[in-house]
Each structure stands twice: as structure tokens, then as C-alpha cells.
Picture 1 (cartoon, helix red, strand yellow):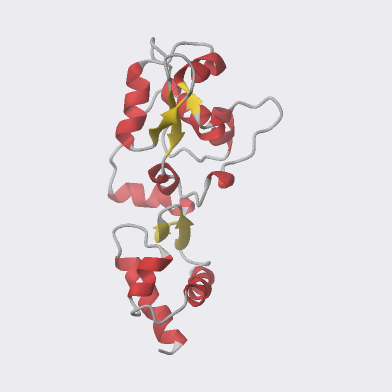
Picture 2: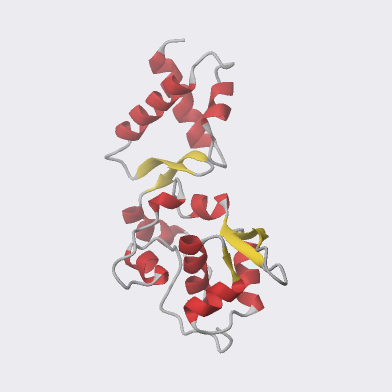
Length: 195
């Protein structure tokens, strides 16, 4: 198959896909006749082709997808003025600690935050699909170890945890995510009483 045609097929598949598509899935479009390296090169070409557009091709932990650029979001919100989910400061801080310090126990989160972590905070992050129990610490009581999920990376358009913004000197994980506008929800909320 000629490469311009293969590129058009990849572009169409990604524009029509509901979920991100990995390279192995994209190879199925060509009955595995194209090597992964060729597909990756075509994806890089597509990313460059769309560089001056309102859409961008991004690689997330779950694969490749097209999405609107951040500077287009305010215009798109006019079409669908739904309010995004609102999370408390406690939820954001807990998520940031888990993202930067994982795997981490609830006790370690509480030590960093300096307050008790409410069960509702952990539950809301688990229900969102952003954190999960990734194991248990080999200490008395075998406390659960929390880590972020592939869904967390995909929702925040991060290819891996290495793409998290670096922490500045003395900066909290939550501040780093706020500074880089990584978390796609309002952060100026008052903490809940049970934070």
C-alpha cells in the first residue's frame, strides 16, 4: 500500500474513533502489512499536518487520538455549556499526591496533607477511574497502595507519568498541576470540612 493512502486511512480511523487507538490496533487496518515503525512515522506526519489547526493528534497512555487544542476549549464550551465536574481542594490534593508519589498509602497521603483523607475523596477518584489499588504494603494491616490509572493519563492527555510537570523547590504536587493547568477542573473551591 502506498504511504499517502495509508496516512489517509490512519487519519480517518483516528478521527472516527471513540477511544484512543494503539499502534497494534492501527496495524489491523492494514492486516498487519505495515510495521509499527512505519505507522509511528505516519502518525508523526499527521501530527505535523495538524499543527496549525484547532485539532491536534496526541499520544496518551491508551493510544493515539485527535482532540481540540486547549485554546479552542472556551469556544467549544459555548456549544455545550455544561459545567465540568467540580472537585474539592481535598480531592485535587489527594490526586496530585498519588500521581507524584505513587504507590502511596492513605496514611502517607494524610502525612503529606496533614489532615485525614475522607473515604469520599478516595471513592470519588476511584469512581472517576483515575486511581486504583495497585497492591498492599507488607506492613502490619497491609494498607492499600494507590496509584493512578491509564484513564487518568488519557483524561489529562499525558503519554506517561514522566510528562507530569516537574515540581519546583518546595512546591506541592497540587500546585504543580495547577500551575501547568493539567487538571481539567476548577481548583478554586473551598475544601470540604472532612478534607
